Image (cartoon, rainbow, N blue to C red; front, side, top):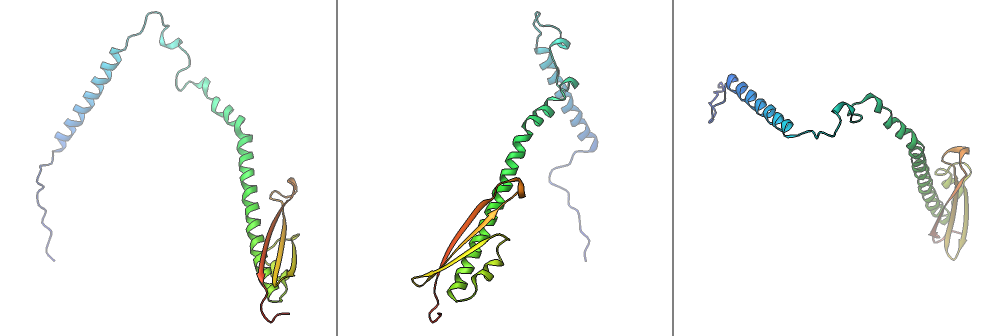
Amino acid sequence: MTPRVRRPSPTPRPTAHQAAGRAVHRSARRSEHRNLRRTARTEPADLPPPEHRGPARGDPRQGGFVTAETAAILPAIVAVLALGLWAVSTVGAKVRAIDAANSAAIAAARSEDPQAVAAAYLPDGATVAVSQDGGLARVVVSVPVRPFGPLTAPVSVTARAAAPMEPGVP
């Protein structure tokens, strides 16, 4: 392996002393600009001195306002979160009911036990109603949903499905 040769860059780099001189120069310009802005402002004679104008930023007497506002809005935040959890659990129950109804309809069309097939998807308390008419197996699944347990009233989620009867099946 050949050693790497470092080539000089096309533009010369400033030395540490030159770079420090530039930084001092920039900061000096900034402070000069700040001083000019401060002197450009004038205080009207009828205003009280700055100490008596009211609370300044960072005043310790103003520290509790955010806490009080948060305490006032906290019940609304909790209600919105509870409503979101309720909606998510209800939609989850609806998806399970649809899956159970589809599987039970196919099982009924094959002359299998639709109750046993649907039971794999459903929680306790769900009902599965099966009917056959005109060459179709129809299933209606109802699931009572209580997202927060006994704290809320049950919501009934219903799903329906139909499947054509298999030929040769009694």
